[in-house]
Image (cartoon, rainbow, N blue to C red; front, top):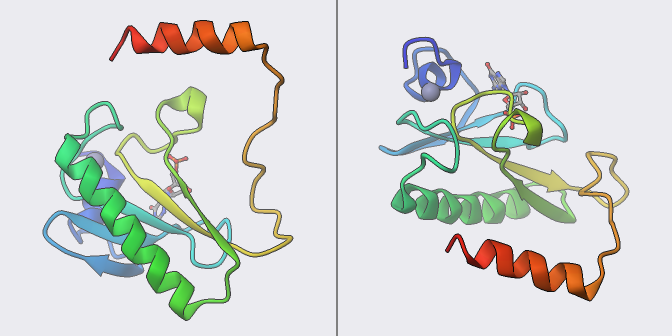
Amino acid sequence: MNDCIFCKIAAGQIPSATVYEDETFRVILDMNQAIAGHMLILPKEHYADLYELPEDTAAAAMRLAKKLAHAAAATMDLDGLNILQNNGEAAGQSVMHYHLHVLPRRRGDDTFPVWNERTASSEELTQTAETIRKGL
Ligand code: 5GP
Ligand code: ZN
């Protein structure tokens, strides 16, 4: 992808604060640090989102997230950690090259609310589970 900023960063054509690199991934610091230590795992190959990402790469990205979680916990002051991944504009994706956010959390920080809770009836839950099962 010629015009993809994350392809260029992952390839090292644009400099970045790199935490880790191997043949499949580059891990950088997000230029907008939601919180100190906010990292992005970028595959070097271009995939727009989770739907395009091969299963093996998805598994490897999560293994790498675990490695980075341990590294952050060992070296930074943190009380928790979120792994976040947005797919599509409606879900908050702004760069259309798959990436996994790794977000250290500190007790009482205001990094982001995880989600708003909505009460659902057990009938709704049963129906929704049935709907999604049809796609498996
Ligand atoms: P998204 O909203 O797509 O899940 O996240 C995209 C993230 O990429 C944002 O948090 C944004 O700050 C970060 N970002 C966008 N462009 C650049 C860049 O050129 N360099 C770095 N380091 N981060 C970027
Ligand atoms: Zn790309």
